[in-house]
Length: 107
Image: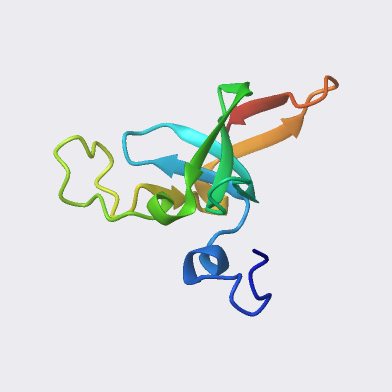
């Protein structure tokens, strides 16, 4: 069931880079990596809230960049479900001494 290495990277996988993303409802998340579900072989994004980094989430990569521009609950006016935050947005992420922890400061 191994996928051909040339077929593995889809357009979405090529589009994803680790970093801070804003959800279309306003939350900010550290999206760290792509993983493959062992049962379905779907590619998923691993992410955690910047304000609660100990709780991890996954979302199918196929829906990570969904067009949400016409949704009524789109409070940010974004085109996509998650959009990468520009480097100049003003967040500084520093690793805590404890494993897996982050301190987030907004400049």
